[in-house]
Length: 498
Ligand SMILES: [Zn+2]
Image (cartoon, rainbow, N blue to C red):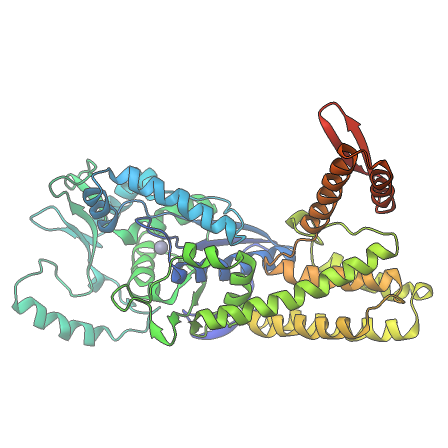
């Protein structure tokens, strides 16, 4: 598999430090409000990438933090007459709810910045001891970027240009730091602000230090992948590299992955333009699976344009796949069989190897299939191969999803009441798996259950009206579908009998 590494500006073969383990860190949100749809892009993209790595057989340690102390959080606390902790806790819970509704898998670890202050102070002290940081008269501690010969290597910024900008600013006398690119590691407290004791002064850490402390602590070793939105390349990730490598003398991460921006109707999203949407706004109108399909239908390094029209067309595409799946499920049911729902992650194939074993098993079970079906299965297998080739090429989900549509098209043209069960099951499993790898889920269980519940309700009404003929008809209808009823004192219970 190849991924694009921002550090080298090249697609590179992905080889983690340890053979079967991937240590991955994704910078998380600052929690002062509901997350917006720009925040959702890295969440969905890198959650999908993690799922794919797991499908390839890697164990993934996935760490994503919450920045729970920051100027914006403190401002919100003051504005709403609450504390920084109350604000951050509230929006962490809201964010977790949105993430759940977007099918984001829980991270292996989710550290909070305020729980790591002690380690950040030790880290900053070490930077001072090593001569990479200095304290100025008001107690602010800065990182001295002039001590790092390759500062700017991630963002490819021209540091000389930045310096000439700095000369103009220093004329105004508003800055106490030595170099324009020097950044704050620790800042002194202001009135009414939360603060921590430290050897430097009472205050709090700057934003860029927390990930340097949390990433090695929770990932338990050198990072394979450090990821985030492209807005983090400079200064955040550049500054993380400068600090980390000053202390640990080794690369912070082997690969750096960044997703591109998200625009709204081809304009930058901003509150002042009135085109600002939270994830909640979208999830109130659309299913999280549709939002996910929409996000992944553009390659992660390409600018993503959001509009409600585009969401509507993603909804139509989703329904096309959903209808295909429900049709196959219906045909399978007519043959007297049931399929397990693959709505839960643990109902998917464990990994790619197992999935291909299944495909090959189906193809070798010739006796159950007619020659047309074998032809179609081979065609579908071809699309499956392309799907994986696309994901292996810098995680091109856009082109991978196109293969799912191709498969849906073939299945819609060929699956019918005369199809063999094995063929129908194959179509069902393949589409479900290719969607599931990307964290997109289509539920069939809910449909069945709603149907059963409404029949039971109809039977209850029939019995109440002493229409025992209709009540028995419904009981038999349910038995035909593999559902047995039991009348208990608490009401009617049902269970599956096949
Ligand atoms: Zn970070």
